[in-house]
Amino acid sequence: MKKKTIVLAYSGGLDTSVVLHWLKENYNANIIAYIADLGQGEDLKSIGRRAKKVGASKIYIEDLKNEFVKNFIFPMLQSSAVYEGSYLLGTSIARPLIAKRQIEIAKKEKAFAVSHGCTGKGNDQVRFELTFKALAPKIDIIAPWRVWDLKSREDCIAYAKKNNISIPVTKSKPYSCDRNIYHISYEGGILEDPWTEAPSKMYEMVKNLEKTPNKSTYLTISFKNGIPYALNGKKINPVNLLTRLNKIGGQNGVGVVDIVENRFVGMKSRGVYETPGGAILNVAHRAVESITMDREVMQLRDSLVPKISQLIYNGFWYSPEMKVLMAFVKESQKNITGDVKLK
Image (tube, rainbow, N blue to C red; front, side):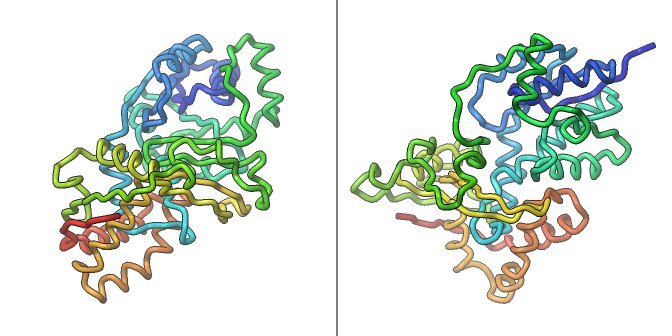
């Protein structure tokens, strides 16, 4: 009898390595490890080898950076979505793309199920599974953290040791972080106390204000139909544009947000975010809109921003209501063309 197939979103860390082994043992299935490159800056080939060693039957390493910026970040920018007035949704907007490609691979490989390593307390489980159900309503979803006996990181470490799973050796941090080309998020650990200042050494993209240059940096961003396409008069592809703006913003101390947000699952959670390029683009986009967008259209669009932001945050990127709202956003951006000079 031919083995069934499961496609796992694999990050290479302790959790998904344990998930991979657990799936193989408990479902007697072929496990395909799918690794998405969203600009997190990791050695993905090494992660693929790790998955193979743990027991994956096949590896997919997908470079999704261009699609991420062009088809997810830029449309979100057009909508002016900012969750609860501060969060630029860098993690939220990444999950629908990762899950979409996972479903495409599952269909190609005729998999009966998809799986992820998200915990049962966070937003990501919802974001992944809403996309799974929107794009493949009949596919099975396996969420190990909601069904297995392992209840903590210590349990996962013990499981890994018992089953000879190589645990990635990383320097211990008093918080967790998630990175892609758009931002870095930090949460948990010492950050759970809202009275505790985030340590300055934590930041990887944005310089502390005390270490920024004493002279101003000027730049010009060009937009067409609400989409940025040129920097300082030169056309540039989406990935390179965002990368350049991340560097410029980071060097000038731009783009750090420290907030307590309302999670979809009902909890409040502190998050610290570095989004230098995104912060610059949002200010620039608003500036060109101030001249080129009709007043009534702007008021209507602004009234929809909280709803659009909430839908993205909660994982409803592929919902019918989101499709309707983004059609309005696209229409609203037809005249948003011009250059913005920033200091």
